[in-house]
Amino acid sequence: MNLKSEKINGCNVLFIKEERIDAHNSGELKEAILHLIEHGEINIIVQLEQVRFIDSSGLGALLSGFKNAAAKSGKLAIANMQQQVLSMFELTRLDRVFEIYADLNEAFDSRL
Image 1 (tube, rainbow, N blue to C red):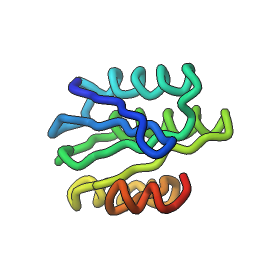
Image 2: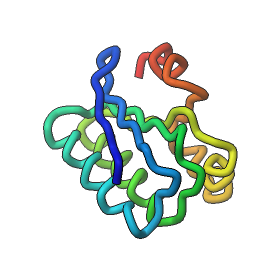
Image 3: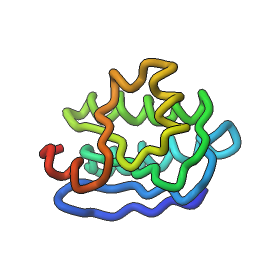
């Protein structure tokens, strides 16, 4: 999976440079998020701008990261979500669990 992690405004932004998050690569995403949390990066914004499709395993990887960050008093939020991906979050009602932002600036302004 093509991932890039960058510290911006006190948050770790995880850029996902893939069009799909599915059973094929969701394990790598889960491991990358867990690695950040284990190394003290508990406030994470996952940037999904390039992602056009996500399945249940991808949603599970993000939810696992959300729970692990919350267990350490951190947050995992989502930014730059495309409509197709947002529809999956709405269908599974995960849009009620995650903080979802239109872009990174909005996420930073929220004092994540």
